[in-house]
Image 1: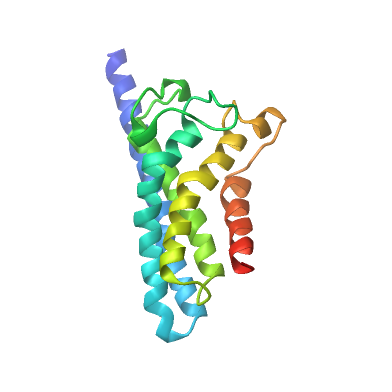
Image 2: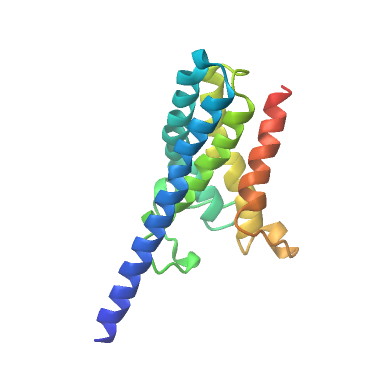
Length: 184
C-alpha cells in the first residue's frame, strides 16, 4: 500500500511539472505575437522563425550541453562536468520525478532566455547569427549562470544569493545578453 501511494505521488508530481513546463513553453507563442506586433509586417515571418528556432536550437543545445553544465556534478568549481546528453547519474539533485521531466521544465526556461533577446534585436539582427547566439546562450551562458545561482555548489549561492522565480538567472541574463547584442 505504501509503495502505491509513493508511486501515485511521483506520477502526480511528474504530471504537475510537465504541465508547468507546457505553460512556460507556451510563453513562446506569446513572445511571437508580442514581437510581431512591434515590428513592420514584412518582418513578422522572420520573428516567427526566430521563435521557432529558439525552441529547436535552444532545446537541442540545452539537451546536449546546457543541462549538464547547470545540473551536472561540479568538479570544476564553476559549472557541472557530468551528464552531457542527459547521460549519467543525477541522483545528487534529489528528484522524485524522472530527470527527463525536470529537463523539459528547465529547457523551457533556457528557451525563454533566448526569446527575451529575440524581442530586443527584432529587425536588427540577421537570422543565422541569431541562431548561433541561441545555441550558445542555451548551451553555455544561461546554464553556467544558473549553476552559479541555483546549485548548492554555485559560488553565488554559497555567498547567500537567492533568486526568486528566475528573476536573475532567466530574466537578467536574457536582458544583459540583449543589451550586449543590441549594441554590438
